Image (cartoon, rainbow, N blue to C red; front, side):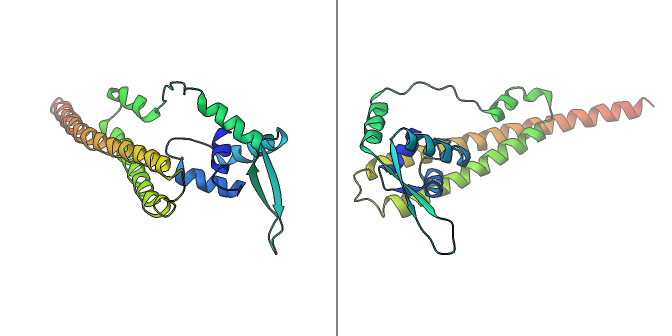
Length: 193
């Protein structure tokens, strides 16, 4: 919920706007699904941390715009003052790679290649956000902090891409060995007939 409070310090937003902003700003390090946004906004409003103004729109559903309250700012500041807890990441692709000896390397090559493509696209998004959004809003007091978070994401994505290149090279060597062993096995089996 703190991500919503933090984003509402930038400007009032609708739930839809918050979802887009999360995706393009903090989405590379904070996961907040669209399905969580509206129930969390409702709870924040009920608890007095945000207020909501309904804007009428012609030919469209009403737009509900949320504003952070003073109570919400105090909650956010209190949360920011608490040191972050270490998190143990969960990465299913790495877990499958760890046990990769059990399946053909070609399958793992597909997993790593797909992960690399996802990271490449995220890197492009982070670079575009910095170029177009952060630089455009550099007069905001928060802009240096936004840039730091974007740089972290860019560096992380570049590290993932470097790892993927190295891993793909290694997996391709393993796949060649597996194919060679399979051919040898099939040839011996054929000779035995």
